[in-house]
Length: 112
Length: 116
Image (tube, rainbow over all chains, first blue to last red; front, side, top):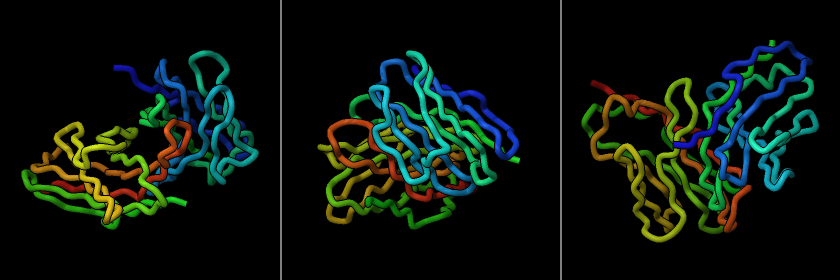
């Protein structure tokens, strides 16, 4: 059964450093998403991506965040200068045309 | 803006007993509705979804949910829980837009504890 994969599973970084989180969506899906979940809190939408551009973004997705689909399979989230409050689980998701979103296992980001 | 309320933060159920997890949404029109389950340290697994049609939908692992438009609710049920059902359950909505790209709005989740 096709699934969304994410790497790495855990990333530890120093405050101010750049991180890139990687995702491989389900191959025939058209829409890609990033969400985050701060420990003990609900899952929050960050951004959606379609046809090589951002479709929608939340107020959380400020200028320090960017997304890219560098090739036909990968979808990345970059955080330019990490802050302590960026520590969270980051989930990638993908969907077909009916917005049935399938999630990856997540990347736990720890900012020290 | 749409919102999702899961009024129960924790629910404890005995193994073999029935379960109902509540979800209410606030939105101007009927959205698409989802239930996801998250086991400790794991990602989110889609249990079931409602797009249109029959208001009682069946999902994986023996779960079902009923959409009640008049109550803006989408409660999740299971007739007999198993110890492996212990997890965090999230209700989520997305606007009905006829296509993708809209982000899901999640509730805060209900933590299900199963007593032996």
